[in-house]
Image 1 (cartoon, helix red, strand yellow):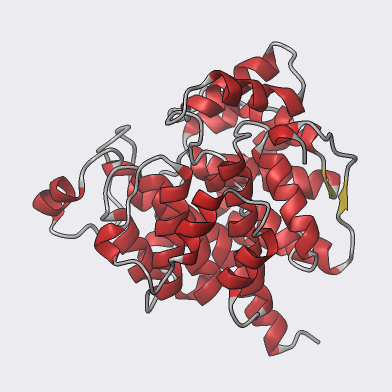
Image 2 (tube, rainbow, N blue to C red):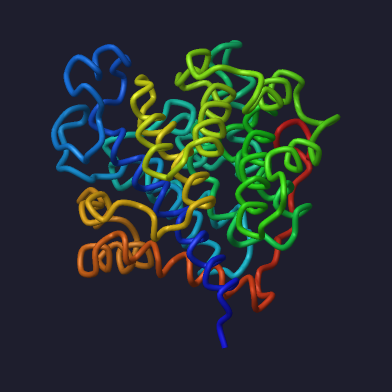
Length: 350
């Protein structure tokens, strides 16, 4: 017998992936636009639009959702966190020709494609870049599936989130940012009292002060107009947690985040994961879910991925993401997930 509590937890798990996809797709057409530009053109953007940035149909998701799917599919296929498999799926995705991909991600995946190890490619890219160009949000946007898979193991969430981030984004602000996000999402799933504070407490003393200070200000010590939506991981996480944890609905959280402008798909995606975990998938607007779709390039990737993407076209992306969250939840509840032996080199030593 499935109890109401289990039903609610599964709805919140589905909300993580569906909220991420909704925020990604809502923000995609106005990526790089300023808040003033969005306001002057739409007053307030609230519905899925076509064309715009990247000139895609309404509801088209970007690399934010596609890379999260790579992680989820790896977890389901291997019943483990296996960074070698995750990195291989990232490379396969890159070879399929995505229309949107972050610079640090591309640089790292090119190194992986040339034969670099998963635990050195991202670190080498990080070390080669100057401050201001070395702590992007490209690992934060994709990491949410780990919160579903390892919700019952807070210490594992931190380890896995940091290690997976370092495949492409090895700066500690990125690796610990992923850890805080996933600890918060897991705490929302399991009904803990103060999800963000418990997540911060779990990494305080180890995580960079700049990250901790920014997150401790959420929600009461920062005003909405102070939030920023650049591609910097600290800005994205602070804004997403603020909107996701203070809004009165998932729709409000995602809309407010996207209308900040700039890196709209990613701040929308991360906010959507938080709001989806908080409010559940069933609260997301049907008018958004019905539009969700994936770009055609995903058809050309490897056999395992192609089979799943074909289902996206057959059943609609929202149904496929629900089924994916169900598989992750069922594997976790059965105690099936394992963690492969991890290197001690990523992000300067985990």
